[in-house]
Length: 191
Image (cartoon, rainbow, N blue to C red):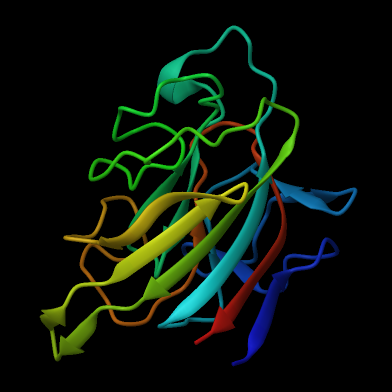
């Protein structure tokens, strides 16, 4: 089991923009904040435990998908939604903690804006035979210590990622959706 530190609060050396150019997000006070385009880890992984911490901006005038929107793309192809959904009933497939457009979280584990939150993602990568999916990826995800997905089979990839198809190994992508969401303490343990 190897731990790869992707962001320790000091620099963006483990990330690039999606076009391969240097990552351009703002780094300040041990966090990075969305400022310009989605970023992708240089490292790729298959089976893994992924840890990501994020903080929503305070946007009281905004609602729905316009309120602290970002995403954590597992393997660069499955989007785990980041959104200010504090106090919202977890019934939608586009709220925080959802596998975007596929599966709502089991519970709303969100904290209010301006508080640090965590995702611990345990992924068993898809098993492939060339481009053919032999077994789909499976995830168990904890948000702030609460299970929001338990052994959920990911039936397909999401649009907007690095890949438009399921892959057995890929990078971590953090999405720019036009909101200044901050991230810190990001690492991957390969399993």
